[in-house]
Amino acid sequence: MLEKMDAFFAARVNGYDQHMKTTIKGADEFYPYTASLLPKKSGAKILDLGCGTGLELEEYYRLNSQAKVTGIDCSPDMLEALQKKFPEKEITCIHGSYLEEPFGIELFDAAVSVESLHHFPAEKKRQCYRKLHAALKTDGYFVLTDYFAESEKQEKENFEALKAIKQKNNLSNEEFYHYDTPLTVQHEREILLQAGFSQVTLLKRWGATQTLLAKR
Image (cartoon, rainbow, N blue to C red; front, side, top):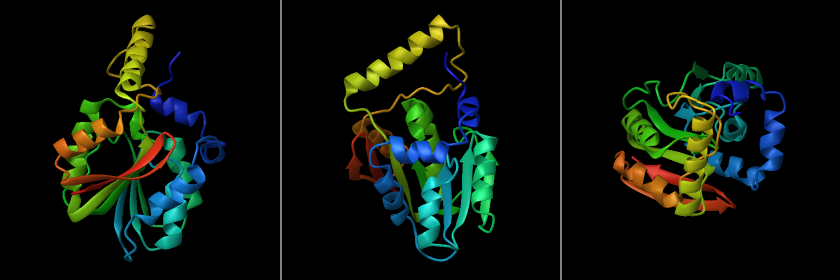
């Protein structure tokens, strides 16, 4: 059976950091690399989509200890772990879905998301990216490090498999369940451009995980 997204992460908060660091190819490199792309100026305002326990923030705070982070996550257990990890940092935690929560207008110097957005279909992402584009300052940008499909065939098969499981178990399409449905890099790039970003560049790759930089 599929697990609802919040329940899935709540059940795995203990040991989550170790799991992510040791089971995903390139994790020892892509967390610090992603952090290195974020603004270094003191007081930089960062929006973290699907922040979890803050693995990318561990690296980022070493580079910018005075950054002001807003983290959105569907799991209150993950957010609690995040706050315990960084008790002295200025972190605003929002319990909710970044697909639904408002981001504000021209508030952030940059946004980041690591290994989170590959659970959602293109249209949901496009709507989210439109909000994100509006929430960034004029010279702002978005760093996306995520798991991508190797081909359109793989992308299609993942969505078809999820649809079949939902139908078999009579699960609602209005609920989000933990199941990997990554897009190809090309499709991800297309929806970011459709959402208003002026330039989207592929920077680096570690197996299926790749980093994109989207400039407002």
